[in-house]
Length: 269
Image 1 (cartoon, helix red, strand yellow):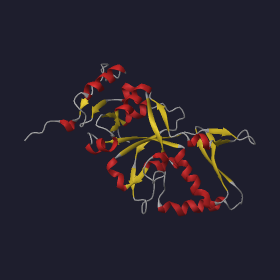
Image 2 (image 1 turned 90 degrees about the vertical axis):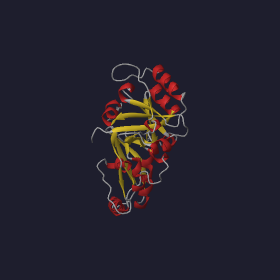
Image 3 (image 1 turned 180 degrees about the vertical axis):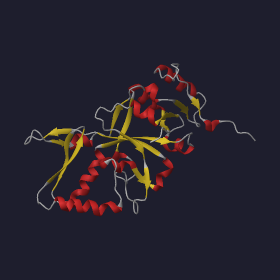
Image 4 (image 1 turned 135 degrees about the vertical axis):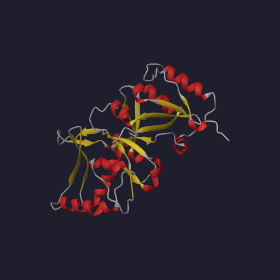
């Protein structure tokens, strides 16, 4: 993957949360608006059904495991092959996603899509800086671009195994040109009957809508900050004071200065 320029558009409150905690927020996969988040393709279904039928050649309940950080965790148990959809949907509760927009310049569409008010900012960085500054203690974070496909006719690339479904979206979202960081996060418990068996704690998991992943060096992650083109003039000074307060520095060691949106440039007639 090339070292692309990437952007994250956000309201001021989310920006302050990021630089104050020095952590990136990851949303649980099933909390995105797109109902196809974590879904597979039509052409994948027969293969999956065949595998499940083969699993039940020997009758009886089957534990469905997932390996995280070298440990095996049971995410659910099914009695019949037809129940496999229930477990696949459960994967959406154990994977968390942080999204970026790939573009060499600002996107007017992204400003409108991701800001709830005029008082927002966009962080500019690179894929290399993002990967270098994520604290990945379990060595399980994957950073890659989203593949936009036809879920009715195309075949999904499964190079990341269970996580692969989260690096695909329908063609209708191609304008987002998205890059994602995806990581699993599980609340687990030990079964009383078998002290060696870890299982998903479904109650705690259902209550975890998002997680925060630490950043090694926030100043090295953030290359530039741009102020929304719709923001009032005084807002630039607010962002400047916030960058100074949280000691966000540029590559020369000076306090980073926010940039006016290019979309506010004066037109020539």
